Each structure stands twice: as structure tokens, then as C-alpha cells.
Length: 425
Image 1: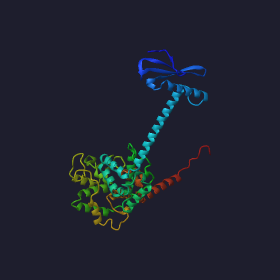
Image 2: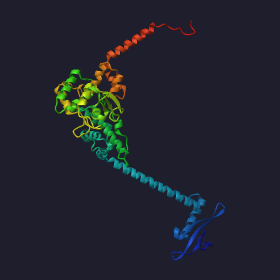
Image 3: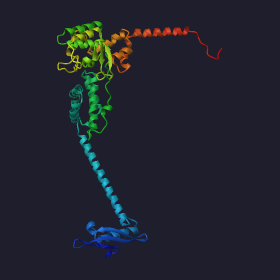
């Protein structure tokens, strides 16, 4: 390859010729600029014409621009500066294009999200939840959706679901005579749908969860009324006489005598029962508080269990007709309550007898009999003493006895010999 430089007919341009490669009809040339800059001669290569597309004439124009910039101070003054500025411009242009593309995608995503309705998100949430959640939990969510949420939100864009609208749904549920707890659960289902939507990729929803800004309906599950001994005996007798409700009687007996919740009773297995020492163990997974506990049977409960046909170690004591866990108390319980007139004239939810009233009755009887609130808390499996304190008004004699004991202690202290302080005679 020829290495000698040849002066071009254009001032300040020189070149060398490739030994065999041609560009068009002429030999390929490697061009270089030669000029004075800051008192020294500078040679900067442009490259082969075949690769750059810059011929001698174009190179002379580039050199003219550089020399003009050297005089005026405006623009690149060397080929190196020109190339650096061109690279910066290229990078800036690339960055602008990337930002423009990101903004386009963002706007596209916002427009897509803008039109997504709550019903569309629910459809995908439901498809996943029906597979991953416990059947009982999912069934409850589906019922709340069909009964209360769907009529209000199915066509509503996600971004337009407001706390005002959610408060309206709660009010509608309560005005229909449903328990405040139902309204609370409906709101929790909506909250879960929004959280699920925000977790998707790409997200279905990017704003705040409106449920966090919605005032919740105050839930009061307290039961003021409990059964008298005569009412309880009549109810158990009515359930026992029913040909279709023997399980309902036996489960009611366990709740009344042991203070167990419906779910705890329905989940009992023969392995949880020790008929020798008369104990029942409530497993951690079943207990509402998340803590296991042991309760003890009365003789009636023990006799009832002994009279039932015992199944395998792991089988349920009170299965439904398919061998699964019962989901709710039998309708025969409500029928017996109505036939006995236990709810006659009772319109307040707190005063009506339901299956849970049996557990409440058990706790009330214990407190009235002098059992401490601490012991009742442990028996019922309350997560905190606050739940048990609702029974404190049933133990006035115990509190009066406590005051009497304290008064005796104070009297002893008043009659005690005073010990003089050291240093004072």
C-alpha cells in the first residue's frame, strides 16, 4: 500500500492512494486535512473516500468551515472538535428519542388504563382467586361481588372509583338490613382488587387505593343478650327432638358447654378429642386468634361424644353429607329458635339469638358463677382482654368482694406499728 502523501489540488488537502482498491473509476484515496492551529501544523485524517463518502472537494469545504471558526470563535475549530460535537449531538438525539419513546409508552399506558373498568379487572382477579383462595373465602367474595359490588362498579373505570362511591355501597348494604360486617367485608374485597391490579405488570391501575380514603362502617359484633338456663334447656330439647337436626343439637351443646365458635366446632376431628381426660384441643390453624388452646368437656358433652359413631383418627366429628367441613349452622337452629319464640319482638341485632349466642351464653354463665375474666379469656380464646371485658358487668359481686379484700388489707396497714425513719429520734 502506498504510504507517500500527495498534495491535492485543493489547498490544505493531501492524500495517499490505495494500491489496488478503486472508488468508482479512480483509485481509492485516503484524505487528510493539514492546517495551522495555535502556532503548529495539525494533520487530521478524514479517511478513505470509499468509506466516508467525502471526496477532496467536500474535505476542502470542511477545512474552510474549521478555519472560519478559528477566526470567528463560533463552531468547532478542529476536526477532532467537530467529531466530538457531532458525537454529543448524536448522543443527545439518541437520549431525546429514548425519552420521547418512553413518554409515548407512558401516555399509551395511561390511555389504556384510563379505559379499564373495575369489571374487567375483577374478571382476571376472579380467575386467579378462584384457583388460589380457600373455597369458603372465594365463595364469600363472589357472593359480595354479585350482590353488592357488581351493580355499582362493573362498568366503572378504575380511575373513577371514588371514596364517595364506596361509601354509597356501604350505605346500600346497611340500609338493606345487612350487618355492618357485610359492608366491611365488601369494602375489603374492593381493596384487594385494587391491590391486585396495582401489582400486575403492566399495571392495571397506578393511583392510590380509594379504600384507604373511605370511612369504614363501624362494626359492632357484641351480643348483649344471653340465654337463661331455662331457654337453653328448651332450645337443646327442641333441637334433639328434630329428626333432621341431631348434628345441630350436638354442635349447639359443644358451643354452649365449651364456649367454642361455630368454625372451631365444624373443624373438630376425633384426634382433637381426648375422652379419657375430657379435653378438646383447638388447633392453631382453626382458632380465630391463631393460637391453639385446650378446653374441657362437661359430662353431657362427653356422653354425647361417646354416643356418636367414632370415625378415623383424622376424620371430622361433624362432617356435612359429603364428608366435608360444614360451612354454616343448619337452618334447623333458626327454625327451633323461632318456634320457641326466643326472638319474638327482638328487632335489635345485638338482642337476637343466633348460634354464636351459645358461646356468649357460656361465657356469661361462667362470669356470673364467679369465674375470673382472665380464665374466661383463656377458655374462649380471645386474642386480647378487651374482648372479654364486655362480660365484666356480670360480675359485680366479684368486684365488690375485691374491694372488701382491699379494705381489709388497708385496715391491717393502719393498725401496723410505725417504723421510725433512720436519723430521726
